[in-house]
Length: 307
Length: 254
Image (cartoon, rainbow over all chains, first blue to last red; front, side, top):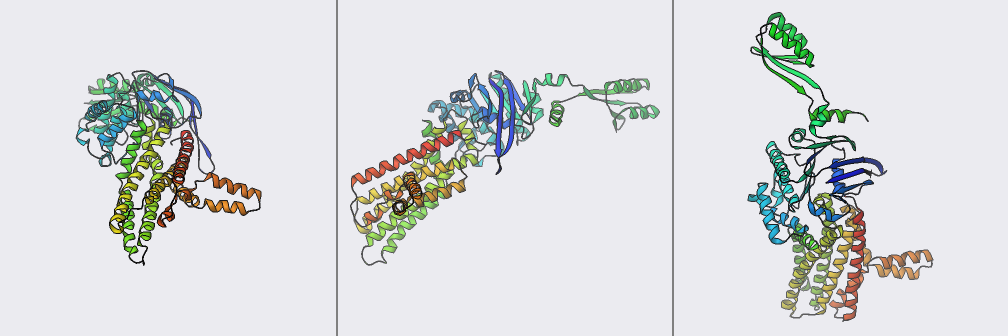
């Protein structure tokens, strides 16, 4: 669906035309029907990549294809929907007028435009606001109308730049549900984000971009499979005196709430020894939770790595 | 169709802006003031009314052309609304042409309203309707089209403030190109002469569109002259727009 090969982007900024490299040869692929999360800290080059794909900026090297056609072929945009980062719209237009303009740019017929606009505004929960000027829209509403306009042409590929940033939990859930709904319809979704919990929930595959380089790519499970159990958290009761003190010494930290104590152990070995001690001293284990690395840890690790 | 969609959107953008109305309001105010001022003169009242009215139509038209014109593309870039448009299956030239035609439509509405009021003023106040005055208005419109195209050209590669200065400078110099040619004729140095001649042919000769003085003094202007001036203006507009598209085509929207 999306393929890039050695995509490079350099900017020259300021009076002295200082060279800034935004992308250092990005090669990646997004397959049909998947939800692909494009992760990376601010300034990693995510937006630049998306802008190149949408024809807003021209790459200084490499090539990219959308649905098998080179990005310079503007007819490919017929089957693509795009939501820019922090979108601004024509705030003097009403929601309905804006949807109509979007439809016109796809050369859609009036009846088709109206029906589709109605359906999409309903889907994003804005049918009540269709005659309201966009300047009166809240941030969440803006984001939703942005998604609605990106879907006006019933695209096969939906590209979203930071669709969840700046939204409250309810708004994020709505966007998440919309993305999953699109996936059910067989659409391909490519979105950039730095909100990681959402990624783990909805993405089939992710790519991590750091300082213009793709550091990791694969399913969330694949990326995390190599990671070890980081810590084990054990909650127990009924242990006292010397035994409790030695348990506390074995743990990297303990919290006592009433008769229950929760202790965190650095590795599984220590946790096993602690478990034996609890049983031997006649205590009771209430819960035992191993903590594996999360995508966030992996992300932090990749970002933290020096080149 | 796509050009039309952009043009209509641009039209809506301008006419839903309060600044546009305040400019029209002041233009109309000046039109009305011409009647008052004319009472202060001895005879020749029609000249004062015609001269002042035509000038105010032109001046406010130029202000709209430049200040709205530079914003057309500039604002889209600044507010990033252009991302939404260019990511859709529209060619960049279609976008630029649509923007231009939208403002041309705004200017046409402006000129129509102003001319209607001006004609009513002439009819009821002086009970005469000199037809050449309509030709003068037509040429003002062509001049505005030229100025708008140059404002768009500048805004494809420059910031709004600089574009406004460039466009304003072009308007002023465009009215003095005859002087440039005169200077070229008088200068002895071949290099200077070549530069002046180049500037003369390169910049729009806006003075060609000015038949206000002749109209006011009832000096007839031939139909050929008007036709030639209109053709010149339209050709100049096409050339500038083509150049704008060339620049805009290569631009990165950061």
